[in-house]
Amino acid sequence: MIFIQALERAQTRPVEQQKARKKITLTASKPDSDLVDLSSTASHIVNIKINKDTSAEFDASLNIESILLQQSLLYLSNLAVPIYSLLTLNLKQNEWDLSLQKPPKTLPSYRIQHTTGYSNAVRHSPTEIINYAFSMTIISKENQHHKFSVDIRVARFTQHNNHWPQPSIEKIQLNPVQSFYSSELLQIAERELVFFFDQDGDTNQAAPILNTMRNDSGLKLSKDNPFFHGLRVWRCRGEKVDIALLGDPKLGAIQITI
Image (cartoon, rainbow, N blue to C red; front, top):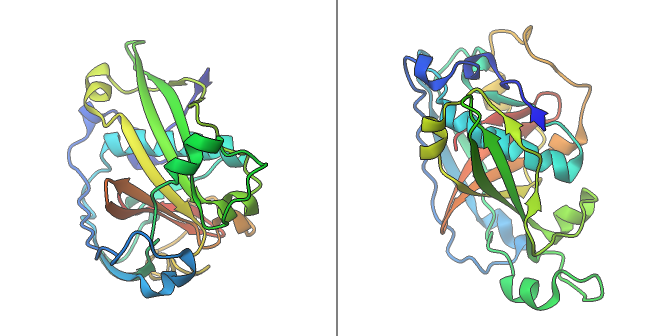
């Protein structure tokens, strides 16, 4: 069993003690087609407007989703991904406009998946979307078990570049996580989450946000981790795709919204 600690100071309080919520709005245009090849992603630039209420707290339910995502990436990359909320970065301004390249397709190739089981014997396209399905139990402070599922979708070339294992049709069982969340909160949290993972962004994609930090004395900066170069994690809800995390080579990941 894994025992976790909250990722950030603003996320360490149980939901019952929180006094306010962080408000972030994000708008993005939908691509013309989900069937566009990834080589043409330059045509899918979306403008994202981020508004932050600096007096608000980070919603604890979002932290639950961060934990699920973090544990899934830990399994795939054997790397603990630090995640920072906008509040913990001590930023001077509350609003940013970012232009990001949106993935033109995020749906996995179910026909190939179910007929071949991702077999190495079959020749696959590097732009084929594959899916890692995870199942994990979060244990409440009342010691009750709550099951969640997380799907991580990537293009096959991303899997290859990161030396990830071949995905399985069966769900991957992650170790249980002991939390300080109440069963009441865990019961209402979203149980099935889907993310699309890519590293196609610019190395300095988070610069408009990070350049407004008052100081970085409280952050754990790394030397320069290539895993976070251009890292983008998108939240998938049906056909809608929203940016969730932005990577920075020295910082790790910044949580934009989930």
